[in-house]
Length: 303
Image (tube, rainbow, N blue to C red):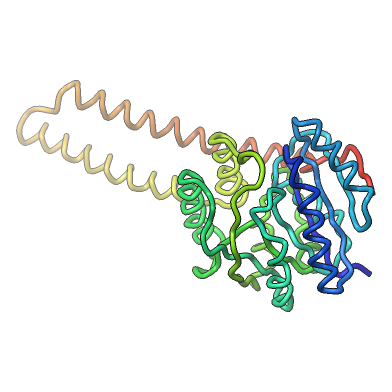
């Protein structure tokens, strides 16, 4: 019987992995709890990453999983959750920004379904802070997230919740969406946030946009509702415009010129193309769902 599983998605990290492993071992030894460490290599371009994980997997309580290609942090995390055997599963980053010494703080609140680390002072750059604020707003709109809860990848999840999350079959998993689909019993605990100990973030601007699209399109109908309401507004404005043109024609004997007509045509044509693009994205995601593609594929497991 394993009480705790620690799932760590890994991407291009090498130097700090041994230190991370040792720190986690010390924490659970002091807690006197049974545990396991699961490192999931998300097909890191650095070959050294998997070599380090091979060596790490020789240690007690440790497993290393190698994916066939890069599926993204969300899928790699889901892979670790599926392989975890613990009653409580902890997810955290591989760069020591999440302090292993804060694990007992999460464990103290384990009577709740999900415990999420709330960082006092985030050690992110300005761009990351701005994108985090934007995402925070959308999390509240889409998931009805409590205002006092700040989401992060450092969290403790009850086994029952993980089992419910794994029942949702999706080729593009979004861990937050799965969590809030299964339970609303989510609490936060304040912890410190460290500076990145190695490398830079694996998220480029385009990858952040792609991840954000998973949130908006794959896990909500928000865009379709917005487009529908926007369409009603455009219809009302168009109808008012037609009445105005008819009024000028019958009472003043003229209509507005060629320029205004062309502007209206271009504007409405652009709106229609944008709307079709959004609907097309939904259709693409529906096709992907119907093909039942797995969110990840495992190449190798070492333990």
